[in-house]
Image (cartoon, rainbow, N blue to C red; front, side, top):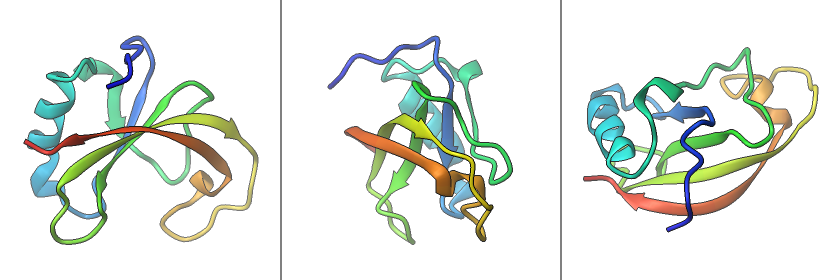
Length: 100
């Protein structure tokens, strides 16, 4: 597992599975993320280069993992649907954590 910079923000995407919020937060905390730096992803405001995008994986009814990605580029774009301004965000896959 890669080292996490716990001072960086992490934006969480649950893909409609709000029932897994607490479980996801607990797993993230036990893997080096600071609770106060994790917030729900917002389609109107993207993160910054160096921050993390964290999402349940695969999206859908039965996610098994939490995918950790690092934001590498943030470009201005026209917001699109539920993705919003995150459409302009490029990211690098770092690793996945088993959803415990």
